[in-house]
Image (cartoon, rainbow, N blue to C red):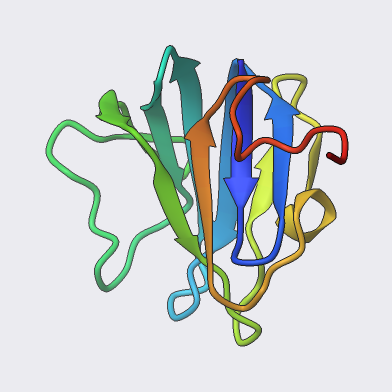
Length: 132
């Protein structure tokens, strides 16, 4: 099932059953990764990996420290994700199921605001398609 990414000026659809979002915390400078799975009309947060901790980044109860990385499995369900992308911080990374990662800007350029991610279908009017 495709995942649609949308800003105020553009939309992109990526074929993805699963993906990982990665970024560096703007204050603590600590790497954060979230592994997501597409399940029907929702996104399921399968795992979170944080390479350290700091203010506002405390691992929750049940998190396990593995080789210097805190790992936990929320398995929460979300209809959509809203990612704030600012010119003042490093962008997110999009990693596909093969583990290949690229800056989010290579997938969908930022408009300096919010990028929304959600499951979509080819017939979805928000998904890109041929010009009408």
